[in-house]
Image (cartoon, rainbow, N blue to C red; front, side, top):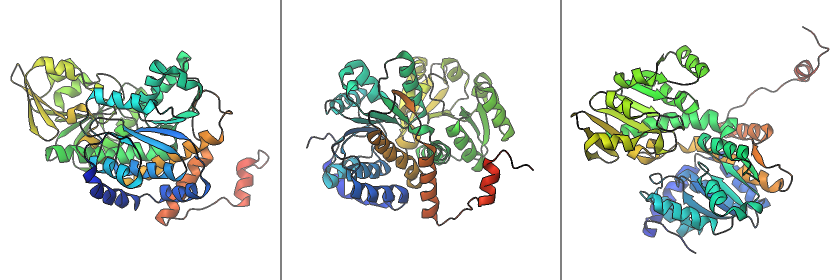
Length: 418
């Protein structure tokens, strides 16, 4: 078995952590038990481009239990947990090509190696694997069953592919499932982003001006958690509806040209390019701390920041100080990559339980509907979303009401009046 990891001797520690996370993932565990019995992915070759964390390891175990031949590669150079990668190879014989701190060149080499396996299904995180396949190995798209996508950024790319007429197979927009983005993006990103910032800096957030760039589900989570720690939260937005929502939620809203002068901390969660740009860096306070939790590092124009700086110095793990020619400094966390995975451990397992349940069931859905799903971007059926939520409630020991026959008749009949 081929693999490319940092150190196979880290496997015992990784296995212990994988099993610890599994305790908090009851929904995925139930799916794994069913997959073990039914083998819905038997014979399927699968590539998963994901953050190699303890939670992803339990997804990989579930896919393997379903009969899939899975290969894992990292979706981010700083998100791999090397002990987890080692355990997947040593304890479950799952090929992994990932190591924390890998270069962009190594990352792309791993993407190309994964495509050499001629996968039937791609589980993607940002659509790099799908995009590389369409640009460099387009012939694979003729026989692929489909892809699943974990992130908002990746879904935007898939929609652009569909619009351009190059997406000739079905893609499941996992991020658009309610049990994914309502919980993963809001509660997962909210907690893990603040966790990463605190681990990296050990600076008190109470009383600081905390700028959240973007008020989507991830931005909502970051703003909510920062306020809970006593920060004064400022939101910047381009969408007037989201901006109003932020105001109604009690946050100050203003353009980045104003917020950049006030912020002590900045977190980007937009999925877009250069949302903090040269002119914003120039106007920031001395010692302003900047990080990203919106997938790719391009949210920050780090190239412009380097050009403005006379010195770049490492101050702590995952903390770099850019000293400007004017003497002021800007501090960048986690090299501008996902701070919650660069400096912390990513989302808590109980949140990823639902996200990865969606991934596993999306892969099964693609196989069951092979040849019948049209090319393009699809959302997992609502009843599957409801099933995942119901399993989660059951695992938490929570019961809810159900409609009585009388209620159901009222809700479905036009003849029943007030």
